[in-house]
Length: 398
Image 1: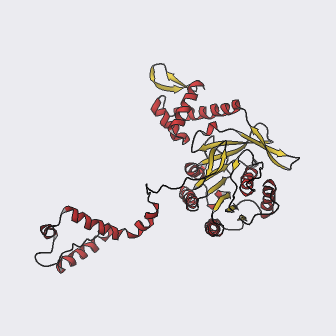
Image 2: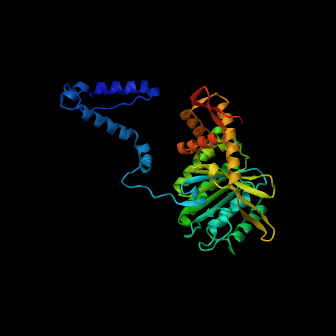
Image 3: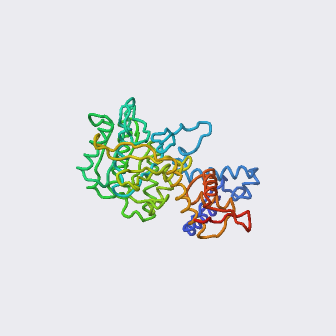
C-alpha cells in the first residue's frame, strides 16, 4: 500500500482492463511495516476480516444493481398478498393479478366478441348479472382502470365493438375508467410506448388497473417469428402486469397447432401466460367453442368446452352452455393421441418416469397432471405396456 505499490497496481489494472480486473486497497499505513497482505495478517487481521473487507468492496462495486435488486428480495416474514382472481371458468383461475392471459384463434371465430364479453363483465355494476359467455369476470367495483388497446381494427369497427360491450355490460354510457384506443395509425414502436406510458398514467389516475386487453399483440413487433423481439415483448408485458398488479389479456390472431401456439411469439406467450384459451369453430360454423390450451393449475383438457353463438333476438352473441362430457373426453383422446405420436416418433419406448417428463415438457403441465394423462392414455390404449419388458411403455394402435 505504499506509493510504489499503488502506482504499480493502477498500471496493472489499466493493462488488464479488458478482462475486468478490479483493485482492492488494504487499510494499511503504507510504511515499511504496513505495505502488503502479509503485513495485514501479521497485524492481527483474520480471514473473516479480509472477507468483510472484500464484501464492502463488492457492495461499492455492485451498489447500483443491488439497489435495483433490493425491492425484488423475498422477505419470508412479510409474505406478499394473494393475487386476486379476475377471470375464471368453473372456479378454475384464468386471469389473475400480475399475470398474462392469452386468447387465440383464427379469423372469424368470435375472438373479439368473446374478449368483449370479458370487458363487459369488468365494467358492469357489481350486483348486476350479465351474459359473459360462460366465463366469470370480477367487476371493477372501486373504479380501477379497464383498458383496451386495439392494433388491428378500424376506428369505426372499434366504436361498434365498444357499443356492443356497453350494451352487454348494461351500461348506458362509457364509464370514465374504461379507456379504449385504436392504435392502427401508430408505428409498431410507438404502439408499445403508448401502452407502457398510458398504463402508468391511468394506474395513478384511477388508483389501479383492473384489466388490460391488447387485441393483436403481433402488431407490436415487426415479425412474430423473430425470437429476440418476441421474448422482449412478452417479457415487457409480463413486467407491466407485475408492476401494476393487473391481468393483461393478450389476443393473438393465430390458429393454434393442437395445444401449441405457432411462431416464436406464440411459444413465448405460451411459456409465460397463466392461461391460454382458443376460440374455434367446429362442425357447426354458427357456434364458437372455447377450448383451454393451458391453465397453470390443473389440466387444460379437463376444462369444460364452452359454446356461444349469435342470438338474432338479442342482437348479440349469447352463451349456449357446455359441450357434453363425451365431447370433452373425445377432444382429450384426440389431443393426447397427437402428443403420443410426437413423443414416440423419436424413441420406441419410455419408462413411466421418462414418459411423465416428456408429457410435462410437451404440454407445459405439472407432474400430477402428466400422471393423470398417462392414466387416461392407458385406459384408451393410446399407450401400452411393452410385452417384452413391463418396465416400458410403447405407443398403442392409434
